[in-house]
Length: 345
Image (cartoon, rainbow, N blue to C red):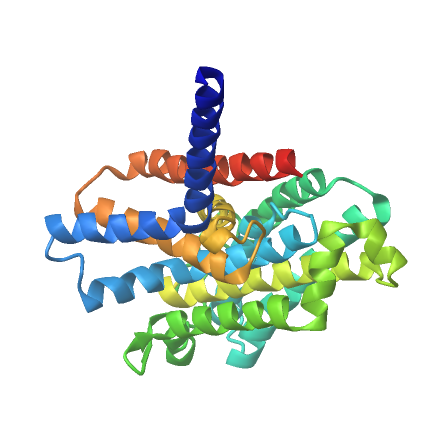
């Protein structure tokens, strides 16, 4: 009898543990977000306000765009480390086109996007054609692009009426129409928030409700099976990295319009935030895979947490500890759940 009771007790404890892990995997990120909002709302009257939450959404808009690009590469079982440098390059190029060359708005928006397409194409060539592992290829591109954008600007940020190294001052200025993209309001929300929401919705629809989305997930899940099903895996991966480059360029344009200047290395500190947002999104509602809504939710969790810590005057240099802790917790829950699920199968 005692042996049977011990076995039953052991099974009960194991069942409770499995249920707890499953709950954390599905609802842990949501529970964390609710706790963060509740906690900071109780200790600060300035936190739970419409103005503060619109500021949070505006602050995460650029990170979310970067993270969506990373999401598409992870869907096809890749990884793009060059998004931060691509954003930096697009930031200074978009600023220089107006400030240095006084070009029209449509070119200022188009040319940086074409740069993103070019970066994505080069990444794809290195990974798909030459066969360099994605981490190594995009890491190399990260350094190359960072060097290019610093060389292009000679190490200077770009701003209105800046002195030129060749003498005189820059002939152009960032137009009001361009600045409205990053600083304007529409229907009670900042324009960057609308851009972010449209891109998240479009990415969700593409990944979850289109044939191309199914092909992307099929390629990432089992490239060999996808090939046998008639999918051109190389073309699919090429498209995913090009999409990543476009999202990074959009983030660069948005950053320039928001701060009103072309800051060198603007994307470097945001790259890891974007990666963290994607992986935190794995555990939203038990998705267990890269997904657009999870990525947005992950960016929101990190953004709300950092906003609350800023209100509490936590030193900025401690923020990386918090972001790293959130990422580790999300990854721990995700991989423990995956390990349990795999062992059962």
